[in-house]
Length: 396
Image 1 (cartoon, one colour):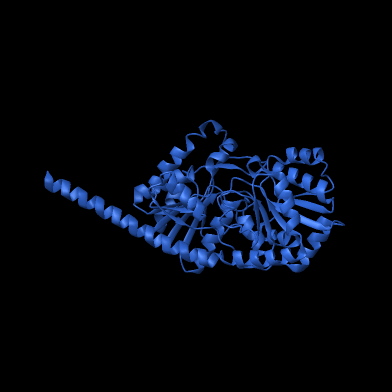
Image 2: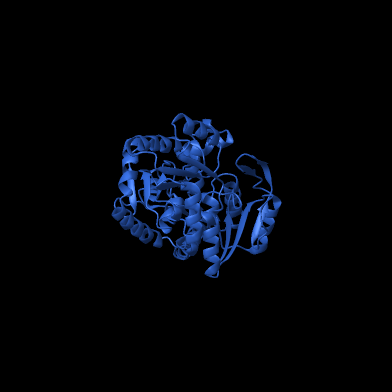
């Protein structure tokens, strides 16, 4: 099968969608499918086979956010050369517009992955005023798709509940095999570097932005310190526009000696940071899947997370970690509960068992089957339209 994979951001940009696209493309290629990734150009990118890098209108230096030229002529030129069987687009806007146009013009089946609550990210492009319009726009976009992928069962239920008529299937982001094999020596060094003389090490991986709810996490750590002492360190892994504000919050809360800003970290290193930590802490309320939760679990690290969409499908209380309500006190106490040695061992084992269900090879197999279904649905739709046209001609 020839698949056109289209995205508004891709490696070396670090984020959930680039990770999802890269892993899915790799898994599908291992199965023998021909996959071409259409993605924006980055100055620091490495040239790879079966990629089409198109121009960008604008790129913000602070965080790498870009506005791609999704109608760069090279996109349609390469699209026509390949004679694709299916388009899989990962964003509804910009490259999403291109994907719908190509699907319509060349009668190619179209599938779309609903990766995130897009209305929560409009402020990055100065479109906050359109937050109320976004659900209607997304409905219109998805109406033109032969199939929509939701990363979790809860997100599938949500899409169907808000009236998405296209067929919805669950397709999470998969985990690479090496996610389950952290470098023990590297993890030990990281623990010594980050924890120092502290007894416990916690970590989180997140874009340093408002929607990740990191101030809640810091408030929880303040309560943890007041009740259980300062024998811990929290490693905040990631970059983002709120870094300065979060650094101020750390000082205001008296957590300077308990917090480390690690900064931008290569994806392949995340497993080592997670394995070095006693627990992975997650405060985001905006995830549709939360791939970093699974990365942590694959490394054998229990998770404490705020109950939210994308978390409830993965975290099972008492098996691989704990979920809490949006309560700093409850969150702080659950962190302490996990640190019991016997509990930690049970949760670590359960975390790995959960992650095993998300290996990228299995996810690619599910995608391949869904693609075949989407192609069949498009064929049925086209045949139905053709029959209606013929009936109209006979009637006239």
